Image (tube, rainbow, N blue to C red; front, side, top):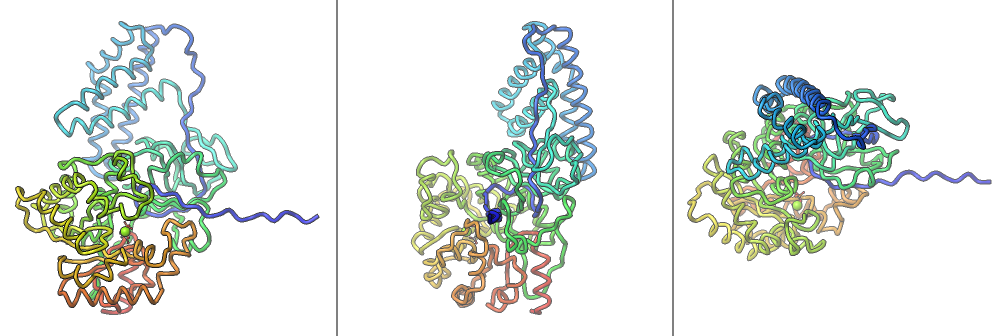
Length: 547
Ligand code: PEP
Ligand code: MG
């Protein structure tokens, strides 16, 4: 009898939201909080419930002190204050007596008292005028969830292909693993051990404390992966890219080599490098909070700020004020270095329910980026005004995504300008992202009209060669990176920009590949934008080539 041949697991890609940068490869380790048996049938005894409540409050206050110490060491005093504020709230007498009152007066269990009293707090904070208080709703939710978890005697439970029930801080097999959970809570990075080299979570915002801590410990995190417990097999190897938000299940050898995975785990920061002559190397960021990694890497500017990531992570369109605050933060941190902020590139595969049905309309590429903004001028208006307000902190290059022809660019720019006339902004420049082949063919006119240009190689390759960028087989996309047709086009675009006397940069995955740096420079381009983790490699390649 012939033995059945075991087929190799097939590579599969899941798209999430990048929350903490870096790349990690490890085994899947699933983490769930599980409730141990609790007798819920008997009538709660108020005295006992109050005692349980006080135990829980004291335990959480102690845990927050640990978090505060860790945050202080990793991030400084300002971040530690968040946890100190939690601790103060837990120790607050009137807070404690409201909880006790809910038990005594209404016969509630301690869990029920925590749920009801903290729900009231959340409602009051959410309705407050102050943006600061509104943002504290997430803190209250965390306190509520942790108290209830303690009272329910929930324990963190882990499983992988070969082990079940490893305790916290103890992987029995000492495997490097990617922890897959429903939510990244503030305590999770602390509860896990040094074998945990990355996180995949279903929920979690970029500004949550947990993500801040993960970033501080240089631990890559990808969020918004739908039903990871169902979509990732237990025996899978996983590669996560915290810069792009990509999760690659069972990556092929070619994919692994491409990512040059560092297996050493959390704690590896971006390599710092100094500018080199002949090539300006800037950083791609997805959220304002990523500006720290850009600076850590020694970026000479932000060459691409993918602003739609802010909205996708928040799960809604951020208000004009919220957007202005984020853009201002990036400009202030970059302290005079160039900042290029891309208008929302939503639609197609970057859709969400809050965008309404026109925006969600299937996979229509024409309704992405520029096309979507024309269909939803209210999105453009809020963003344009936010950018105009942020521009008081420094000049902004506003990049228009998925432009396909001159009239479209002019129409959008007119809408932008009309939206901000009362703000009388100065220091805003308008540029085209060359990523649709038709726009590349119309480059001479577009570069006359625009202030600057940038070549977006990810979509350009996708649409030029009909090579789906989300194709699980990475090689099928990367092989076009060396295609003569693409390089002819890049060179033509570079020449067109020079003739128009306008700057042209290049971004997309190709721009971060050191093997192609020489070729990019040979095309006449002098500015690259790439992920902070690729900056040092690109600079090394540039200085080996010489200006
Ligand atoms: C690109 O298409 O090359 C690009 C930079 O944009 P994104 O990857 O965000 O589509
Ligand atoms: Mg693109």
